[in-house]
Image (cartoon, rainbow, N blue to C red; front, side):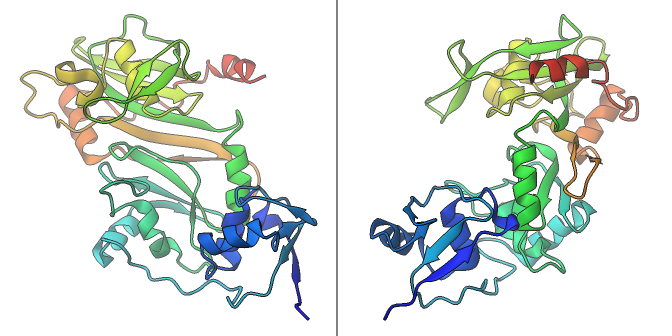
Length: 336
């Protein structure tokens, strides 16, 4: 007689996809095999047929047929793909906060968060190296573009990941970015409400302003400027569209310094030999409800190339605390 297992979903797995649950608890079961089990109805939730993309909830019961896999995570190598031990050590040095629930790193510019076409060296490939004393591999909560530096949060447990994933969909997370832009906005501070859409192009996908696109909102403030030739902007995105800040800055007629993709030649300062041609966009700080309770803020230092540019332009990076203190009333009103 075939014996079926019925396993109850714990709080640490609340909200994740069924295929992620299997990967977490039965890592030897590949995606193809899971799909076959689902098609035959051998895997069910509360007695009902489901799909691999179904999100599970705490307290639900998952029926699992007899399988040969050991329902315990297999030991994982710290290094994989095209990653070296040196790469992992550099990532460990980028850790700016660590507690029982989260890790925050100051991601360097040029390092992708996840892999893609032609990308084998990325944060996701090195997360085993940030496991430290925990039993679980840390989990990505949000993303930063490859060329953007700054604060990147990781959850240290499945429960923290579930909590933070839900929190990041609310109004309670404030992300503050710093950018050096070419020129100076005509209006020194305000809100950019400009819908965006992805479009194919000769040199890959590009994001454009489109009134029929997805809603995209950014609050911004000009902190300082260098004789009108370049400015220091602080930005707080309400939405998280691809390349949102880069396109919104271009629409202000002040492209981000070094952003040739969206600003073309206008994104570079003529005769400024002391200024890097890298993208000058940095995730400076993030404030959010901590899984252990209360609000928590992580602040990161500027990347080396941006610090040199700040010095070249005469900007004092210790000039401000919270540039959006007077914006929060409108921020919360927009989210009601």
